Image 1 (cartoon, helix red, strand yellow):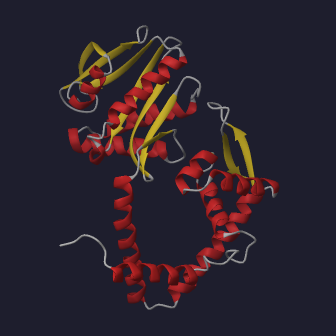
Image 2 (spheres, rainbow, N blue to C red):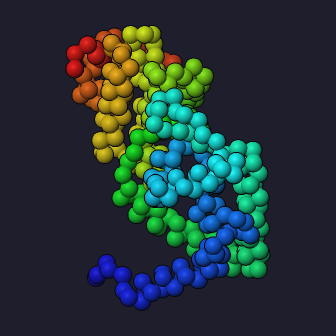
Image 3 (cartoon, rainbow, N blue to C red):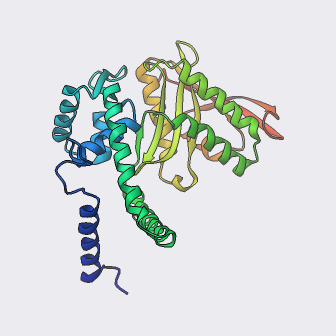
Length: 312
């Protein structure tokens, strides 16, 4: 049976798209009785929910032409809606945030949008309303699966919400896969809090692996002292294993550590984490110590591994 869509199926999707965009007012030059275009309203939404995002990230994530995006941001800036601060790690980039006036503008648009949807759904009886919502979920989940499978995995710095995800996923995954108890999640939380509170962006970094907006993994590099860095909290989601993602994350740590002037990297792992230990050995790390313990499970053996950066 052919997997190609029929002409009738294509026409049905195009017809629904025309109907929905007209019904939601997306074809209007100005959206929600505001002076802003639909694209500008979407941009304000991103800025409200991703404080500190860069123009590069916005252009990439929204699929916008960089020149077009730059003109919109300049208009926002001239109206006092956004502020820029130079990145401490890359002088070519700026972090963008809504000003108080920008937050008020977005809040008004957000209320109007919610009211528009409430009116639309309010005209339906409960059964039809749930049917519409279920259909939307089906469309989203089906198309998101295609996008996630084909999108490129990117490594980016941490944003608000990422640190909580790191702690949660460590607790869930290691609890399920190795039986480690809540003391391990507490350990990860302590490490994460110290990282945020004492972060030196010139010598420390967090990388979040992401594909199609979904977090797939993470790793941290933190300073032990001027000569030594520590690799911490390497994690790859089960469904993303086999993509070489763990190797990429470890490689980013090593490259960053060399550029920051460290002489060596150390890490702490467990003897039963065979996949991670293989990655460390492949990157040139060598086991230098081991200690039995029961800190978050029975019969564990902690290992220290070291990579000498004096040689390439």
